[in-house]
Length: 119
Figure (cartoon, rainbow, N blue to C red):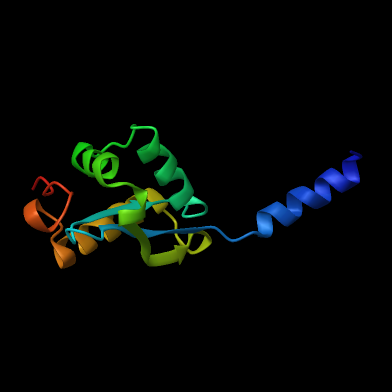
């Protein structure tokens, strides 16, 4: 590939918008939910499914239910998204967003897979 084409492709890539945001995975049978935030939502459901299918998901309780019940009994939803180019500190914004969604939805114990935040 010549330099001019490469530079053109790099510029096109820079123009692609990326979105950070909050997601929810729902157990369709029990109604339990899992909430998390990510700095880049592109292909996130595919990545999370792969982790769950391989038995490598960070949340042990959700992982156990996924294995026992199967992927077809779970759904994925983006709760909120923001363009990352609008945000100075994406990592901090993810933490703030996660805290807000956890407070609103309270996905703990019988209602969800998340662990309460330490104060």
